[in-house]
Image (tube, rainbow, N blue to C red; front, side):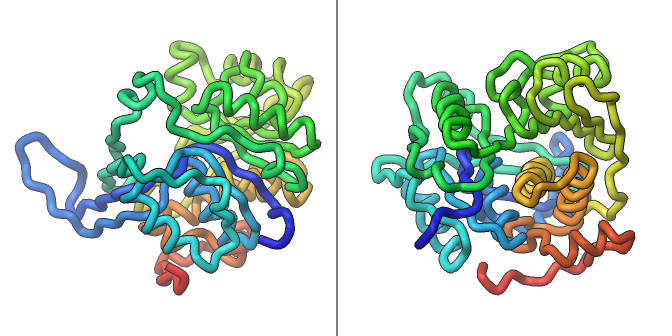
Length: 313
């Protein structure tokens, strides 16, 4: 890219093997027919990059080291797109980080080796570089990479780049200084078991410089800032084909809203519309939400449930 991209992304960039089942989810000791399967970019950061590119945003991304099985697919997929892969480290001694996801409508089960990778004591992700962040207008940072995630946030603050993060607890520096922190139901159960969403939001709002959004799948979203009353919003009703990437798309929508200076309610509504479009088709990387689809849903219409093939895929 000749100039700084609009957005810097730091976090998980994977090769995702996805399997859409034909007749419901897996049952013990029963055969399951695969309707569709793909090997495409995934991870919270990889998916966000794909969505932002489809929304017309230029992206530079860094994070997970890319191995020999993932690299050819990743490079081919992003060729000709507004996604700068130059910060990524490509390694020759490892196949790369991959996950496997079985999907049937509202239900999905991801599988991988992340517990083993994190327990290894070895770093398998990059150290963010100041020159990659300076000049960008917004950022998104996954919280999973320990000191490196915190460094990315510090570099963003140093250069005045507002950032979106996800699932960062109320006492995390990532949450405290984020422009937007999106909390999922998974984070809620992992860090705040037994506490109501309203109680968790009160904790979050008290410690935040920015906006906190709590998503609850098909349930209503909660959002607010420090000193403000808690606000609520219902998600857009759509026919669900696959929920894979729904949260990552919501994050991308928040980045887009931040980039365009949207008010809080408009930002949350835009992100929700992006996510609604995303879950109406499969696979998401080949059919990411387009601006006209999101705008159509925001205007009270419906998204195009017959997703077209991406000519760049």
